[in-house]
Image (tube, rainbow, N blue to C red; front, top):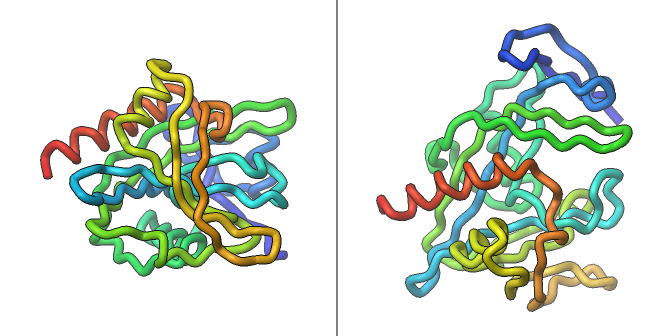
Amino acid sequence: MEIEHLNIFDAKGNHLGVASRNEVHQKGYWHETFHCWIISREEGRDYIHFQKRCKHKKDYPNLLDISAAGHILFNECVSDGIRELQEELGLKVYFEDLIPLGVIKDEIIQDNFVDRELGNVFLYISNEKLEDKYIFQPEEVSGVLKIEFHSFCNLWKGNIHEIQASGIEVNSYGKKEKINKTIRKHHFLPHEEGYVVRVLDLIDLELKNI
């Protein structure tokens, strides 16, 4: 497997050089990532989509996460991150279709894993259902769940403690099946609270302006 190399930065955004992905997470260097949040507008309601991480992933298996996301390699531009939508979800989307939400810091710190991301955050809004369009990258994604946007905001901010989600998931036979689940906050990857709240506020603003 080819070793990924990433640009590394200090907390002020000054470029420090290049390091391998493993070194970046071991030493806690700030590095650039691409985050794309997907909203589908269906019958007058907005739904936010979350990928379910594959059960075989080394970090945070089976948890719900950003619709599509990945590292920006040392020799890439931010726009190259659009590949994550194609690779992880099978969606053919142009970079020009995305709404930029800015660079938002996100830290996840565990015992032997320090992930400090300079997240280049984007929003993709679809006016159609996406379930039939998704083709999952097996080693990365095992499903996608969607949640009514404002209900998820209330869940994340602690106003409610559980919510219903629907979507598709790959079963033990490798086939996609429709699912409905009761979701609580612990089902999500533990992104920094401030990061998620900031993203939700920016998405809400964009949805109000459309």
